[in-house]
Length: 419
Ligand code: AMP
Ligand code: MG
Image (cartoon, rainbow, N blue to C red; front, side, top):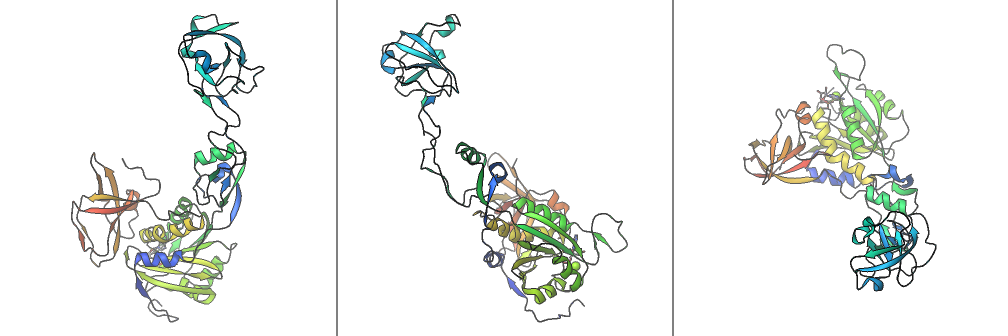
């Protein structure tokens, strides 16, 4: 039963940063896969991309107007002959000679001889008949290259446009498209298999019988995995038996990471630990944090396993501190943890026991600074305080209290916009 250990395992108390480093040491970016560029949004380039082409591919007009020789309009106002039109997507059928101009649209190739474009607004076009324009008055001089986009102005053949490790956003995807790259090599998404444990835990569907609770953790963790960029695979709920945990862990294809919830706290049935002991290796730590003190980390075969505590908030907090960085490292990111900011704590935050306390809170903006406030009951089974929160307010293990008005570090939840 609970306190009876079936095998000898020293449980050590370690700091959050230490636990994080020990876990991260086991992860590296996964192999590269060629991915359609739009599906690569938010993913990390696995290789440098060097352009083989110029962007834009030819010298073209940045404005609708008239292609001219700048030397001809140095004494503007001046009247030039109009010898034709160049539309976008066509090529000029003649060159621009002395005293001549061509009507030109944005994106159209600059005709030979011309070296600048005068915008419609700087001509008398609007006061002339629309059709059969034979001549045009240019109202001011232009510099050579004015309103001209040079070939290769954006990207030159041979330029390194994206380096390995870059997170691909919309602009990067646009550049890849300009280079005619339909796919890009990115580190693939890890598959993360999620197993909840507990005789009392029941998955969605059947009515709860006395003594049973709903499996919320698998779904919270699946959402967190997806938010971190991984591909969640739900393995369901295992009874508190070594056999059931074993069977369910081995039921699916080998993932890149197992995440379990429950069965790692002192006084539990030790089922997760027993399976890891038999199938691989495991460390069980008491992490100097609150919530989320018990944490297991080990391997099954070659697959790492992160054993989160069962309490819903503890599972969420520990995943964000240890699971998210592991997944992001597999994706090739260098920014692994949630983004952090400084804010002023508006309330007193006691921290008995001197563990690093991840207080569920709201950070909001005043005109001058950011304010942080806890969101009610901080019990490790009270998920609603996390529902109302947009951050963790971090009370360091070195503080036994945070007084109102003190600067605190906050970790923003993924996707938070501060208002
Ligand atoms: P354990 O870590 O297994 O001792 O579980 C700690 C607490 O979390 C107990 O109250 C469990 O009932 C609860 N719990 C465990 N697993 C889940 C789960 N999948 N969903 C919701 N609550 C859970
Ligand atoms: Mg349990």
